Image (cartoon, rainbow, N blue to C red; front, side, top):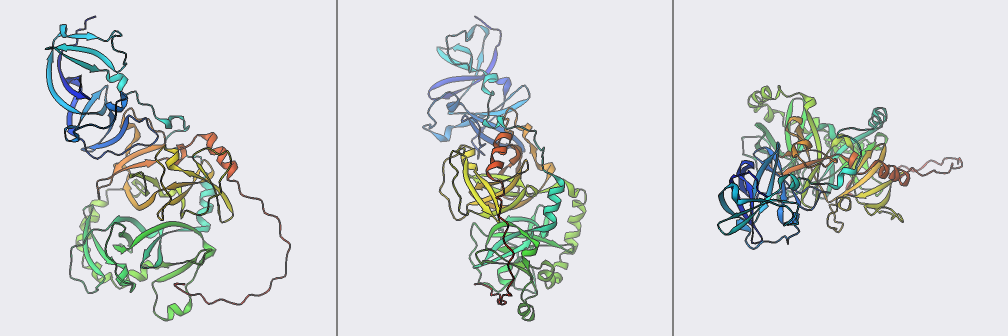
Length: 507
């Protein structure tokens, strides 16, 4: 059977076989860049790439055809960017062969001679056979996430309940300086970025290191380790800069390592001991002590920045010119994300959807629970089901490490803990920079809200929607597992005054 489709086609090799695609569908051909993997997707969908601001899904032809993954010469591997009916996608090929002119009498439709549905036509030219790909079939990618119910962005959270929680709790970003734990109120933290060596400027304080350029803004950098009298450590991959804003001044504080985000009841946030105030430690705002007697010192932003205001004022002229450009961006267009890592892929979750972030505590296994449910934990009297995101996304198993964390979130009214490899930083992003999941074309990951490119390190971040990571039935079942235990009413006993304990720092 003949067809009238003729013209130019590009030809390429996949495991010594020749394939072709009509040139009219080809946008460009590129070397293989860094590919961000998508969880819970078909194996042949390698992930997504950022092509000059456009997010493009990439399909592995080898894996789609069931051919072994490895190729002999990686240097010759290319990605062909195609567009079909408004959908852009890339396909990986072993080696490009070039472009051929195809005549009508050289094209034969696949009428069953080739079993594969991915082959549309067969081109016989100059004693060579080229198999033309069926692009419609090629982009019929199915994702395991499609079974999750609900629309993107929808939430069944109760606004009233959230407000009640906010009234009795406070959130803090905690970090390490030396061996001690410190924290800032999360409302004062604008974002957390990787360490960038500052450009030195004249300053009267030794802990004022200089300035960096952050998205067209001049940001002063101060070493909080020197400021607090701690021993300065070498900069490594964990060194971070916490960006703080107070009284129209913005400054970045260098810390050794970001620990976690904690959500603490206000009645457990203690004032600092009086003797600390008398010794001139005005920058200490409050003290938090956990059940293991570990102490976190919450710093007072205003007191901390008081003696550097003069240095900051010297930069006011430059900063004011930047603020004029920023005035065009509405505050409600900005959103903060907790960025975490799974299998070297970065994910983001809106900070408002995070109840708290904890180290991995003892987990009690549940018999006959789904494979992705790791068990339950006791969080201050609440029994919470814990989901291993690696198992949920069908990723390789990884041993629990010192940086493993549990992100506690409320999903459809149920508190659930999600195990992640590593919480990296907090990022503030303008909503206009987030590309909706629809821009990924045929990729239908219901649990993704979108994707954005981190301008600081050019990494791709997938925005997760915890609401749709599991089906409604699965969430309901987890709610039954994680119900709050009923406690027996205790008999009233006569209270005996306890001796006051002296609070010790750095125990």
